[in-house]
Length: 154
Image (cartoon, rainbow, N blue to C red):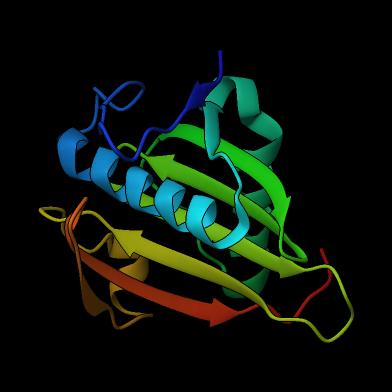
């Protein structure tokens, strides 16, 4: 069952099993607000079991590009097109959010982004490979983020 993410009244629906559920919900709402304001896109997520193709796609990009496998179980995922980009998001139990931004046009930006919910440790599989910058969010508290550019074709 899909869930439209409300960024005005933040809810932990679908994320209750996360030890940082409230901050992960804020992070998810922060993403929803961004896409609504920038592209007038309504951010809708599905349980990971119902969005297995999205979870597999994000996992494949991580594995093929940087030999990364996320250890935490996926809770929710979504995929959509906005502003000339195909976007895929997976929200993990640990509080990690991974997105794949893939420009549709040749030569457009293509990258994988990582965002860590406030209160979570940097996952072991990412700690040695990335440095995380901090940003403040009214919805999510402090978000730590990093990214890498995608070189392959997906």
